[in-house]
Each structure stands twice: as structure tokens, then as C-alpha cells.
Image 1 (tube, rainbow, N blue to C red):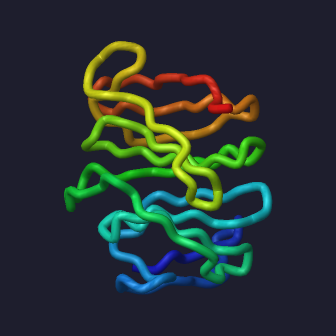
Image 2: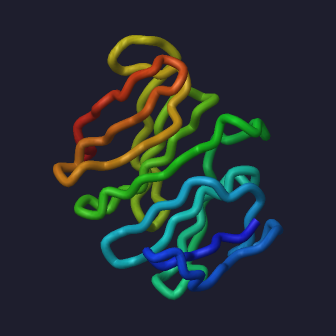
Length: 152
């Protein structure tokens, strides 16, 4: 239940966290993303929150996620950061949606619902943000990647 950090050559650098419910600790840490300032965001799945850490891995903030209620071992949330717009995106696989927050934890938007059309998901898992701000979501059960415009 720790996040371990390695250099590009595979050399161990440090670790942070540990099991628990207090700030800076995790219960099923899965999704991980960084922003342009070097801050780290961790999907603390079973504590139903996103935690933010500084470039030196010091705890900065956390905010609740209205979702992630399942303790499934296969459907995990992932994170991506749009550093230009200051938005943290989080997948919510079993609620078939993507959540968006400002980097301070303020809720911005949600999009998606269950389905196979161009605005829906059957199991959104992986997520990434392109240099142009477009949001790429891997919809695992539908075997496709959906592309969305950046939030403003």
C-alpha cells in the first residue's frame, strides 16, 4: 500500500504512503498522475479519495470521490492531469463515467453514462490527456478509445 518511485534506469528512489485511512496513507492506491509542477495525484481507491503530494512526496491535500464504492479487484480507477488547464481527470469504471476536478480538488464536471454511443462507456479504465487537451478514455469492455474535447 505504498507508492514506490524508480528512476528511468530502474533504480529505486523512494517510497511514500503506507496502509491506512489518514492523510498520506492508502487503501488500494491505483491511478497515478503528475502535473507540470511535479505534484503527484494518487487514486486512493478504497478510501474513495484522490490524494495530492508535492514534488518531494509530501502530503498536500485530498478530496473525496463520489464513486469507487466497489472493492472489485479488476475495475480500478485511473488518473490523468491536464496541466495547461489545471484539471485532474479520474475514471469511475463501475459508474461508467469520468470525473473532473481542479488540482485543488474542486469538482468541475462529469461525463459519460452506460452505453455504446460516442458519449458513453461500458468500462472506462485507462485515461490520458494529449498536448492539445483532448481526453482519451479506454473503454475496456467495448474495446475502443474515445476522444473528448478539453474542458474549459
